[in-house]
Length: 122
Image 1 (cartoon, one colour):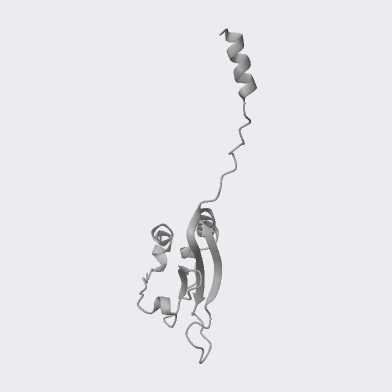
Image 2: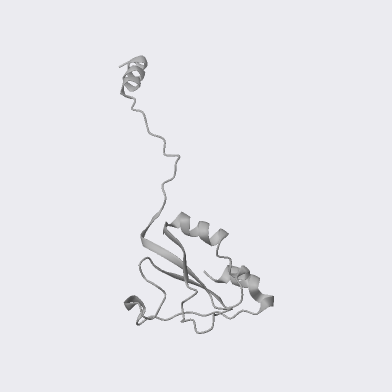
């Protein structure tokens, strides 16, 4: 077979390849929710969790990092503010059956060390 014949056969067999330049998001196994609570000024007689608010829900790695880099910067939080990360559908309350046997981590940071928390919290 001559070179021209091979090139002609290959040219006829070309199949268009779809571009994969658009990256697909990296889906997580489940949805997650960030919750925010600021008890620095609790209202008289308010129950625990009265100031608890769902801040954002995400289900991809990219969405998590987007939230991490733009919204939840620990050094910018007001004193006594809390960030909670829970599976979607679970509230950060002991009364939720999913939390009945759970625990929590608490970091107390002095004002002159707040910037270090931004790097350490993950």
